[in-house]
Image (spheres, one colour):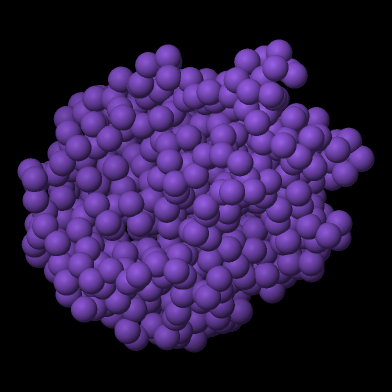
Length: 583
């Protein structure tokens, strides 16, 4: 790995941070340019300001990989001829390279700011502790992504030590087990430093503890066969339960509210990439709407995601189909509409200044959908909803400022309270076939009943119950592939079988069907086919399933990394991280 590049880049961390300004109070920074590392961290406010940018800028280049790995590989999303869809990712892939660069940049920046704050003498110990705890949590999060994506990876504990030794391109990979132990150690230190409650949007003790619970649940299967390590399951349950009982946080009443701009810092959001719109500071903004929304969804000419969308397999999981008459669609799960647009859907929170968003009118009315595609583009018959904010009016209504081209401030939620609830339920279930534990059921049913108010509460849950609930709850949020990775640690064949059985292909002729329905008010697949001459709308069951193997669960290192560090192609080493490193 070209650690030289990554580490040297992070020495720009303070200069990058000091020069940033923002109209968002969470990211406010002074515009003075007379500061440097030696005199900037001189008071409490500057400590908090010095950490702010690690919530966004270093993560910027991970956004596309976040979706392609988390959603496309998992079968939750269709993305054209993407190699992520068919498990044919090459080491030269640009999104893979950007992803790797981004995650190592987070670690480097977090290390550097952590050290800078530690050397400062002006701020209160309370402010130093809190902000150093934030650095460590974000560093642990980056390593959590790295180990679940690439497997065995190098450890970079301290930038200065690495540069002083001059061996930054001679780093060996470290065993996954040791990486997980390092993540645990880092989060434990973060929890020592963090306050029990912080300002909205900032990481506090319970945010780090929630991540620690998820790390333990993931590690529980590592090196196991058929069952998971009970001590790790117990730890996951303990930490998750503490968050549930003592954090003072609650699930939002309405699921779709989580993903609106006005709720960027809601109590359900434990850890998020917290973006801001600032034309002078590129990389601090969310650009996901550009990749995921159809052409013309906003006024900035920056949406090109109409050809990708939620998969047919995910639609099956929700129990819906774009080939069903919208007027008779049975749709009890509120998460479906908050995740995917189907024909006939309307949204009161998009295009508010136009009375709401009507997806078929957008596609086929050239006045209402001015600048739009003039057709339904995605072959799965659905469009993305999550990570989309709407038009400029919606952005101003929710954030107080208009969006800019490829720049919005919608938070990307990485760890939500609902995740901790389901981590707890699964950890209590553990290796058992089922559980009727009251507290596990309470956590599980809280998540499920919010989404499906008509659902009868479960009196017993199995692994399959939790597995499906996680998919529906976090669909589109970049997490599903990592559920497969952690399951593959102890039950590889089940993951391979499930992925091979997915419906990852598209439908034929949905555009003709949808257009006929919009123009005639009649849902008739045969009549639509006759009028258009394009044939009936049917699922493509001819394209073969992707060839998923055990090697598919570890993504190759980018070619650039391997060129600079030959050790990445060698076997990993064991490191006693507790003895070797300390904070």
